[in-house]
Image (cartoon, rainbow, N blue to C red; front, side, top):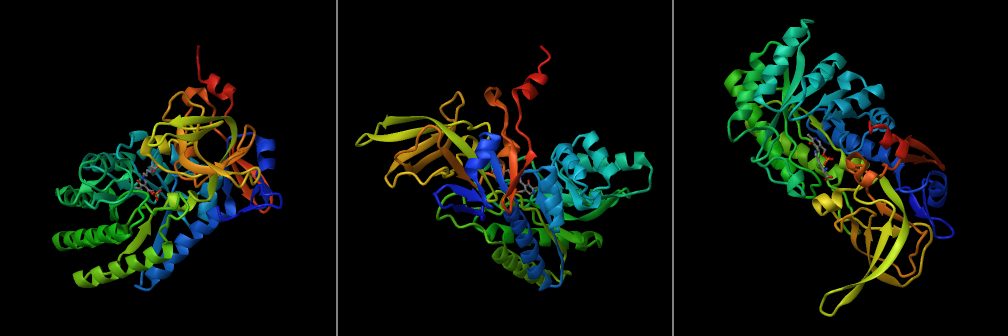
Length: 442
Ligand code: LLP
C-alpha cells in the first residue's frame, strides 16, 4: 500500500500506524487496509477512464467488483469516490445495500442466479442484471411479468468473445469452453440479445464481456472491445436496435512481486478509448457509453496481511548441490490466502517488526495448516535472524484474500482493519472459536 514506510527504528508503519501496535491491540494474523490508498486507486480508475473517453464524446461508469473484497465500509468508500458496485451473489448485494449504495448504482452478475437472488435484485431496483444464459432471460422476464408492477428489468447480456487473456486457467473467462457468457462465435450471444428484445418486461442496456483476471497485457481488452462493438453493430443491422452501453469487465493486473509492472489505468484507458472511437467510426455506429469493473486493481495493493512468526526450521533441499531453505511458519496460511495453493500465485514477504540482519537466507513462508501445499511465499530472501515472535507482512493481499478465506482446520478468519491518518479501526472483526462452534448443532 502506498502509505507503508519504515519508521525510525526500522519497523513498518502504514498511514502513520506502527504495525507492532496493530498486532498488540488486535492480535495476528491481520488484514490491514490503507483507506487512502484504496480511495486513490478507485479515483484513479474513474478519472483516467472519464478523461480518456470524454475525448471520444462519451461517459464511463466504473463498477467496483465486490468479489475482490467487500465490506460495508468499502462499498461506501467506493461509492463516495464515484464508483458503482458490481455484485455476484445475493450476499454481495446485501452488503452493498447495507452500505446504502442506491440500487440504481448496483449491478448483479452470476451464471446461476437463484430465483431469490433475482427477486432481491428487482426489489432493490438494481441498475443492471447481467444475464448469462438463454434460460435466465426467460426466467427473469416471467418473474418481472409475475410481479406486475409495470417496471421493466434493466439487462446487460454477458457474451464470450473468445479472447484469451489473464493468469491461471481458473481465472481466464472469455475462452469458449467454460461456464460464463453467451458465445459470439457460437451464435448464442446474438440469440440472447434478440431474446431480451423480444421480452417487453426487459430493457436491453447493452453487452458485457469480462475476459479474465490479473491481465498485464492490455491487448486483450482492445480485442474484446472490438468484438463487442462488432456484435453491437450486427445486432443493430439485424433489428434496428443499437444498444447504448458496452461493459468491458474487470481484470486489470497488479504487481505482486518487486519488479512486476502493473496495468496503468491511464494508459489502458487511452488505448481503449482510441480503439472504441476507431472501431465505431469504421462501423459507422455512435460511440456507446462504457463501463468497467475493476476489483483486484482497486483493493489488491491497498491491503497487506500481517502474521506472527512461529516455528523457524532449516530444511535441506535435494539439489545439485543440496542447499538449505529456511521454512518460516506463520500463524495463518491457506485459510486466509488460498491464492498460492489454488493458482500457484506468487507473493513476497518482508520482516515488519524490525529491520533485521543485513545477511539474508533463502526462505519459504508457510502456514499452520495440515498440508504441505500450505505455502504463502515460495521463495524469498529474508533476514537471517528472523525468529519466533517477529512480524511478517505479505503485501498486496487485498483482492481475493479475505474474500476467499475459509475456516479450514477450524481456524477463525482474521479481522480487517482500516488505517487512515495515524488511526486504525476494525472493518470486519476477528472470527472467534465461539463463532465457529455456534454453527455446530452437536
Ligand atoms: N467483472 C466480472 C464479471 C468478473 O467476473 C470479475 C472477476 C471482475 C469483474 C473483477 O475482476 P478483477 O478486476 O478483480 O480482475 N479469485 C481469482 C480471481 C477471480 C476473478 C473472477 N471474476 C483470483 O484470486 O485471482
